[in-house]
Image 1: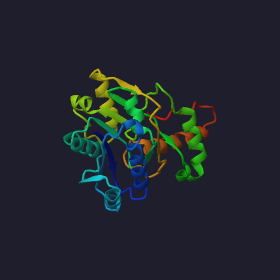
Image 2: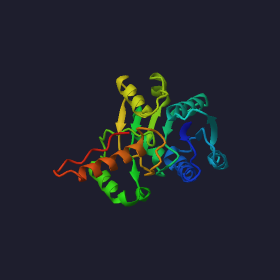
Image 3: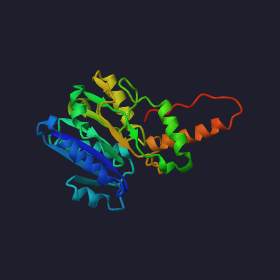
Length: 239
């Protein structure tokens, strides 16, 4: 069985599209009918995220932690108990490609770190074009990249358990997991093959997360543009 974990905090506007894409990925012919279970971890939700997730057929768990690392860990633990051999992670504001799971497994690695794309930059208003340009200039969306995104991550249950799983960090729990996997000698595929499209939201859910990195990128570009001398474009940090 393959397990998918989706942490969510008040994502009623976006989670439906996420789950629709996950169900399509779960039915890919390359999976040969292997069961796929989706777990949405409702972290301090006060909206209809859980109702939408249940209606889609996903399993839901509720916690009150405001901690994405804990949410991912709780979801992973449930799926391991239910027999998952592979754990795939994404976010509730993200849409995965139809071949997302099949592409992760095709790389035959202990873990897979994928890249992210952004389809709509308009949440950043008048800075949308600036940020889109910055992302295109600085983000390495290719094989052999060095990004780690919780929105596009997969790991075998064996390797995950060997390193103790996700730590309950305020941010960068995905980076800490991958660092531990690398240190353990696990094979990690840094690939642009598994595709996801994520939100360019301005309301960052976690300090140091992807949305927060985008906000910092805007601020850095605007500051650089105000300088009298040319400064190199700041690089979007891995997250």
